[in-house]
Image: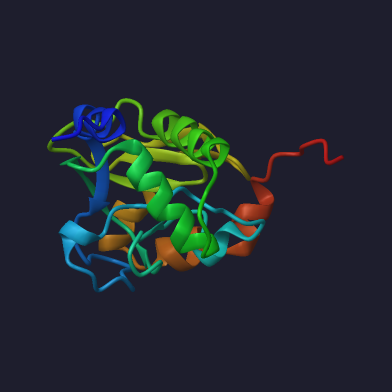
Length: 179
């Protein structure tokens, strides 16, 4: 039997905490089984009100969903990165692409806790049980006394009057130097 150092390394680093679809509550276009619906790296555009600024996407079907839960995955960071890259670009990533993906996702997912559910908002992962949201996101500054996706479960106007409202996002936009 041959010793495969790369395969052994992947097995040793495979288990780690990650996020997958928790349920089909609120907005969920993804119909994949929970076990298959890991989140992808956010690819938020300049129109976060369309959903790219407040919904997760599934690694398998690429469709959106709202709520994610923590799972211990058996795939390594590298395997998930490669799978996300192949699904997004329909090509094989090089080692720099994988390293960049891993760096971004480990920062994004730093601090996730077992048993907790999360939502995505403008470059941040927010616990669903948070008292509110006070962040400087990729697009906007958010200072809310509630988690909007959670509030929207009870009040549909939160979706139309905040999450999907272009005017909200533009009124809270952060001025950035654009080269």
